[in-house]
Picture 1: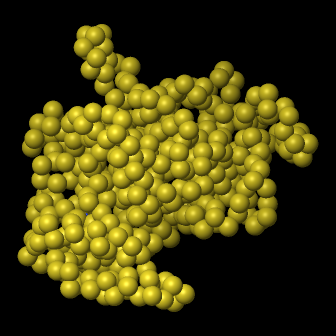
Picture 2: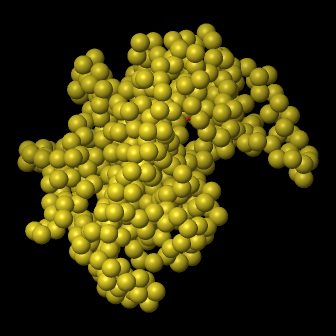
Picture 3: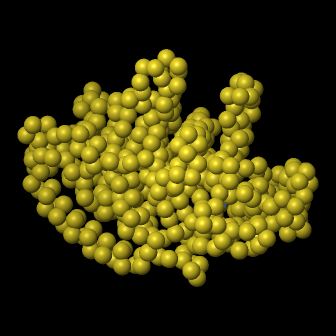
Length: 472
Ligand code: ADP
């Protein structure tokens, strides 16, 4: 089912790119505002200045982009008026949506004022499973020292150790509750690869051997690192199936922290009924789409997903609004605290932004657990609905990054994104005065609420008189 979507997509991309090239020839000067019209722009390099003059002479003001092979991204960028893909490997670009390996291999010591790229240096501090936990543990320890226990809301990640280096502390913890289930995950793999569950130490005895071996043979081949984590044995089930949530958070600055939460996201269901009596069935215990789509009873039309709006409605009908609001507020807490835990480790740079995919698991008490943060969440579509969601998400990411320079910088909402943190919590504007007096300000987050982005964008980006309408 995925195949036809993608092949018709390729044709569509081609048509749109052709149309777009045609359209760019006719875009009048000033119909798309070039960024930024600041003092620093006036002092940009001579080369850039000459290029701009040439483009203005030609009546074509554009954003030159590179975007690798991500089809959804190519589709979204190809539709943006005034955006032109740079096909040449060494060609100059203004905007790059690249994968992590390309980012690592191309160190940018200098970038012009207006240039933007989709990763921060050292972003792996949040997205490598072992480093995320290391940073969260340190952050939690600092909080324990600095603030009271009741303010400490940092118990949202399952107890985790790195193997082989923390094998001995893990064994101590393991022995406290014999019979509990643990999950082993390779730190450098994704999409459920190499993951397994266990209840007996003998099942990971190879690790003990390997850890001793590394100490003895320091020059020998490196052992693959794993994290071992307490398995959430009581996941929230719908139709007896386990699921986890994928939520999108966009960071446009780490210092000061500025983060946006997307309204859409989805729940990914397993195809097999959940039971703890079988622990070696990956279709039952791992909810990754990459795993589930190989299951015999996987339905490609539905893609095993629910929009997060559907999940929110379901939970509200079952547990009431208050309970669900508390759950979503706890998720906000996870996003912010996890970002704060790496705020001083990840290298801030005004040219960078990052779109993170958070994986959250709910337990039967409706407590959310942070499993993982992805720096390159998948944009591949498993259904038409999924494709549309990802196009909205990516389009709005470009709207926030604002290469066209149409925003004022004071917006609290851009399309489906709500500003969640701006060097401090961001509150909704529709809060009534009574609420302000009782200091119950409501966070400006709307995960799983209506995403009326088209309407919002129309209001936000009303064209100036005489300006051609910007299609976003
Ligand atoms: P990957 O990077 O390979 O996707 P994850 O940490 O996201 O690794 O785990 C894959 C899947 O395994 C998750 O989507 C979830 O369904 C399940 N899982 C991972 N950790 C736990 C845990 N501690 N408790 C319960 N289920 C888990």
